[in-house]
Length: 127
Picture 1 (cartoon, rainbow, N blue to C red):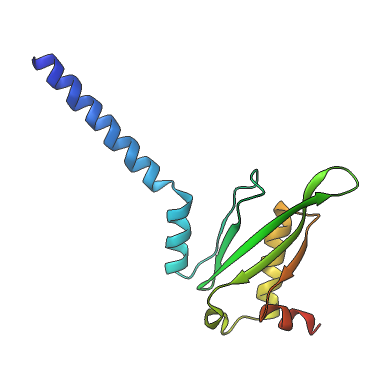
Picture 2 (cartoon, rainbow, N blue to C red):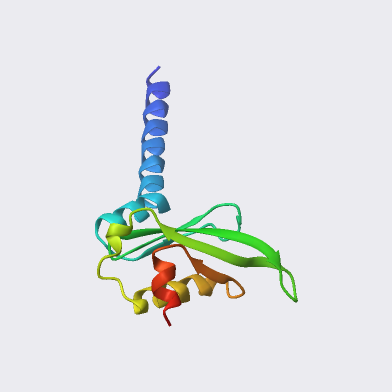
């Protein structure tokens, strides 16, 4: 009976340790934390084209939708639409900030044409 109790305690300790590690390394939690701290974080499942990616930068949360197409060499993400749900968080953003975000997105999707949704599109089209 004592051995079963010890084994049960060891299993519970291992399970709790596992849950703590999963929580600490969860990318969604890191995204939420970066959003609260108004810092930069890029969250994307590069292998899954159907999943949107998220970027938090300077207190704004951006979402990007990926579209698969063909290039000269292979099937790749060829088009990306990026927007923010709360455009009031864009106060103080400059074209340089959006160029930085474009460069970060292009690191993973070099063949993609990046399209911004309004009101960011209006700012970027003034070039």
